[in-house]
Image (cartoon, rainbow, N blue to C red; front, side, top):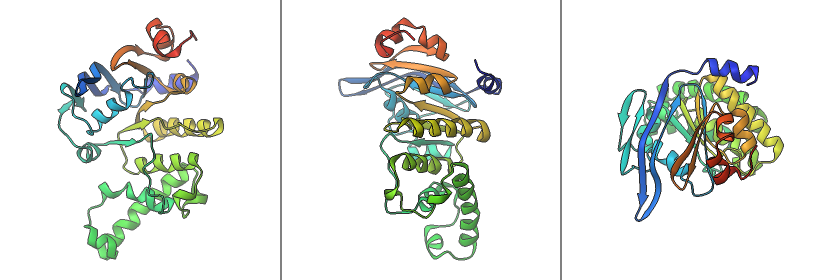
Length: 267
């Protein structure tokens, strides 16, 4: 363990999210079968597995897109069920998606500002007219967004239409929009998919900085094993909807079931 990862491990707290016996099926197809794992505050928790293992389905259960047929989820010590994504977001869980869902015709700044919507108290009409309290509120939220823009080093693109940006920068804007919600837990669904090596290195750095400087707990799906093993504190492994491994990166590397199902060779 490096000095940096050891220092981060020393700040990891109690369990903040617990998934217990979650099963999810679509007709006769079982996406998840009795999956249990927990997430501790301030850690980087990776979910890995081959295509079709149930990783994205698991994130969809956590953020309320899907409601499991069996099992429970406890967040901050309280069980929640049948919550929709809006309610989950209000509770402090934000998410990025594998397929970008940015507003391509809007600027970087405006896309990130959309992530502040849950924090705004003024109604839509006052926001549109930018009157009185709504204008003051917008200025306050814009200051927060400008700080995120500086943090992710995208100042030069703040007024650029997102659709004109390279893919790697669009992924950074997607991360910025999620951070604008000030989440306690951030769910990242393949944040480095489609990136080149330099872009992946930048994204890894930003994810670790978010975890370290903002104190945000990260739950990460990623196929690049070198990334997973470098930045994760713990890894849970799914295969055909079932959990086959759970532990530190070193423990997962040494798990023969994981090697057989996903890694392919011993590392």
